[in-house]
Figure 1 (tube, rainbow, N blue to C red):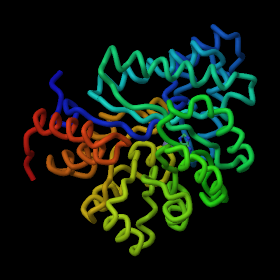
Figure 2 (spheres, rainbow, N blue to C red):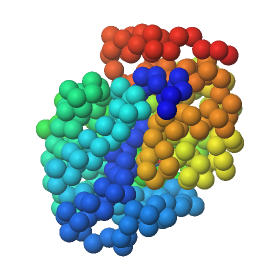
Figure 3 (tube, rainbow, N blue to C red):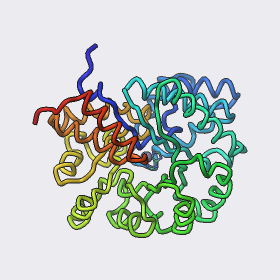
Length: 337
Ligand code: HPA
Ligand code: ZN
């Protein structure tokens, strides 16, 4: 099978939840290995449940699915499987969310979660040359005190965690709830990002920028309800980590053809393309690119710009960024408009 240019190009993936990369087959295998009872017997039964009216319905299944993850080996296997799959999509740099609050309340040691995932990143660097690291995710429906406990537990990992992020049910949980946590992570020198403007209003994007001082917005697609905000995001070249298939599966847009990704790109925003929770939403990063390209009629130059933006928005130093941009230019010479 010949790959399209965008499929073959080296890419960054900046918005992927490791727990959301749990494939049905692995979920069943881990349930059996760990003797965790789940209400599904086959992968097809699980896939049939991937039908969501909104973010909350997805989150409930996503949290239930995480119950099979118990040991350091489980977190290694989960992370390794995702990185190997991303490598097949020619992803060369990954920044992946990991959610300790999804596991420590079930008695899983914080160290098992982090050590397993970090070891898989180390091995993927050697095996595939993949760079990147972990975004420590916070559940936004939990309290700020809970979040501060997570940061305390993360202290021994301070130098091995790339960034802080915010995920979970957005409405009613504004970014400003986590001001002190973000202040501390900034003092530690971590990069900062947050989900905002997926289901929540444009004001949450503004709060993430002004109060949490994030360098990137996850999703952010509801910015288009505020022309002033769209202008600001374009002027600041503030990256959005957009997840087109996720947005359709969670009814943020009725269909891919109605997605605003192309409009935002044309308005000058630094839009990137990512997979969010690939088995749940029907595709890894290449599927997000190719299906968006078809549904929205993206030109080759627009597709190249999206890939390029992934490296521009990555939390990497300027030398590595320049190297990745050169590699991209070499692999995919200037496309057609
Ligand atoms: N939004 C909020 N929380 C999440 C998501 C998302 O798209 N995916 C996994 N956790
Ligand atoms: Zn997400």
